Image 1 (tube, one colour):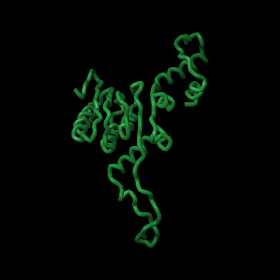
Image 2 (cartoon, rainbow, N blue to C red):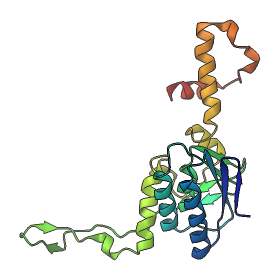
Image 3 (cartoon, rainbow, N blue to C red):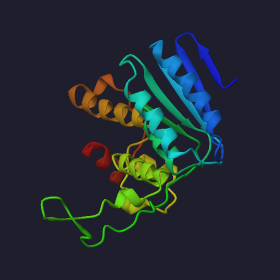
Image 4 (cartoon, rainbow, N blue to C red):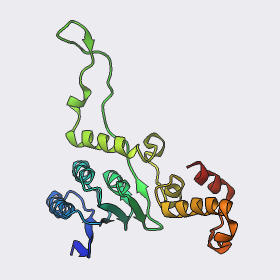
Length: 214
């Protein structure tokens, strides 16, 4: 089963394979039907070592952006993810990832804008529309990187393996622990007796300062 449901929660499994567009179309249709029911939660389970086409991920994103506000999305990476699949994982309201899994995305292969090459109808110089010379798939991937940059600094992390610890530092996973930590801090200031010290997980000074800044 690729789609499972229990009560008002559903799971859709995306097996990441190389260039199996028909399979992804079936999963997109399954996801669309589920979202129309406005369930409480949908988990997208990502597993496999292949690559999801950038256009497929952008289609899924457009569906998720139009979902009911009642529906919470959980993305669960069972495997390491690369390229456009990274964006799909980032779209979750809650993100889960295997402890030793990693994320990776490559640079986009686009031509340089170059010098002005033609004159527009009103006599002014204009740049050649460089996107007209780009493979459409690569143009979609450029958009994917633009969206990833809303979560992670693409210019700094392109071509690097991003592990769980780095994701934690960017606040992309274990946000619940951060929220509980901040709640503990504020509660202890108002009434220390209300918060058992055993419930507070020790934090390194640098990590504590980062969480407070967030």
